[in-house]
Amino acid sequence: MKGIVLAGGLGTRLYPLTFATNKHLLPVFDKPMIYYPIETLVKAGITEILIVVGGPHAGHFIQVIRNGKTLGVKHLEFAYQEKEGGIADALSLAEDFADDQSVTVILGDNTTDADISKEVSSFDSGALIFLKSVPDAKRFGIAQLDDKDPTKIIKIIEKPTEISTSNHAVTGLYIYDNQV
Image 1 (tube, one colour):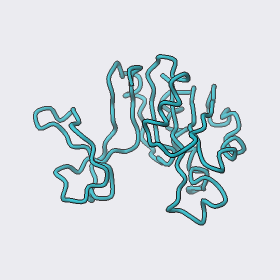
Image 2 (cartoon, one colour; image 1 turned 120 degrees about the horizontal axis):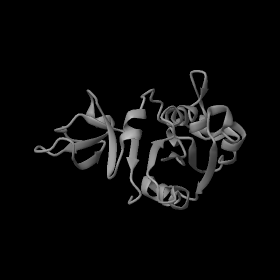
Image 3 (cartoon, rainbow, N blue to C red; image 1 turned 30 degrees about the horizontal axis):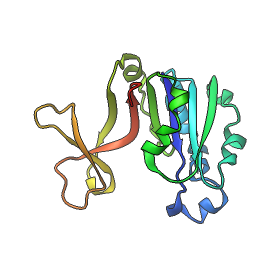
């Protein structure tokens, strides 16, 4: 299993901080934000990682992360996303890196402390999207689950404007088989 960190966003809502660097490199507590998703992957035993970057400060990632060894990464690659095209576009840049293996994808601003080791080691095929119950569904992408089989997601509604029938937020952490 390989890991992909998506860090191509421009962070325009954090301007003027993002005038100087990418939002994923801003400090959260005692380290750059990007360290948290990398540590989540490494803690799960994933040490081959691709970071998809973009924007005018893409080179800063190399200055901060270097080769990733101090974070426990054994093999680190970067891919440059030329324009904002969302998750699907970013994942298309990872096709060669994935090399027909399953991948764990995590958003670069995901500061979770979740231990996903069990899910990674037991993953067989398909897709696994990590969800979390939240009190205010309007602030998140929400997964609408199948009434008959609540392990299946029917659709994802990005920041619903109406009252949602679900409070299951998409956390920005996914595991996909090689068919994605």
